[in-house]
Image (cartoon, rainbow, N blue to C red; front, side, top):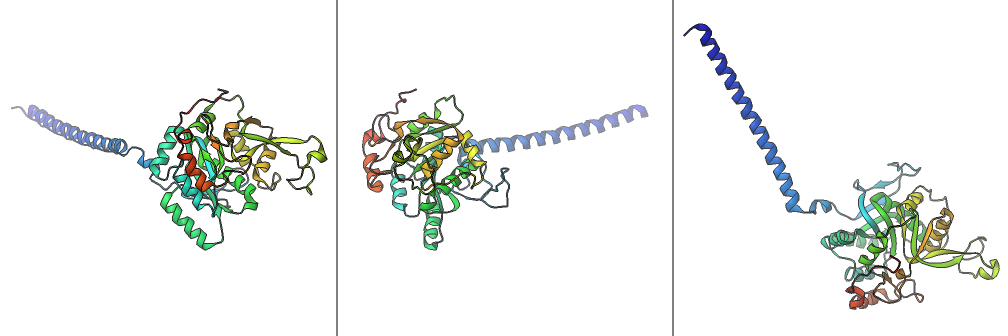
Length: 345
């Protein structure tokens, strides 16, 4: 065989060998990628939504100087919590003396476990958490820590939990809720009302022409023109006709645009009154938002369309919530009646 033919054969063998090696390497890389991708997909399918709640859902919210929120104040969310997208976030306002109320709620319409809360959120588009501040009482804080570890259904605010400071807590709640949840509505509710989440979901899902909406069961209250006058004094006899509309305190909702405006406020921007519902109502009047009155949020008993049930006008909530909550839930008209569209839909 001529030498040039030998050289050609050698080069051909070299290139064929090199090509085989490259093809084998590419095949192994492709196989590895396939195995990796298949593993990730399998985990996602088999694991369902478990990874969504891999981290604890109770979260502490503190306002300090470490992280800028872009509005002149600073906010720090423990654990780097990312904003979770929901249609509505419902913060159940509670306190250190309300352990019994929370237990009654968890035995009725508020699920007591992760799976139950997840299913409720998936069915309604609403997320629910208890909202509480802090106290200097170490035994109470220790008991709260144990409850958080057991149920993991809290938003913990770095603000003193006192009845006299409810307006401050309410503002802190809306700021924290806005930081934690990307929501169309933010709902403030008390821990002593019986709620139908499915019906609340339908109410919040309605199309509205106003992006700035203040939704609640409305009542009229006095305009505060004289700081020396107490909130409960009959100003009608003094001022004649100056009254403004605001929602009853046990439950009301603010649209995202309204809460965004509240978040932008400094804590001392607006005046704080004795009652948080009056405080919010006065701010809504100043912000010129749309007031949406819905009496289904203040029903004294369960009906085919009631959304929130409490003992209006006797109590600002259920008069004996721990007992009454269980009694209401045992009635089919309260817990099992069909969800009907509202009259104005």
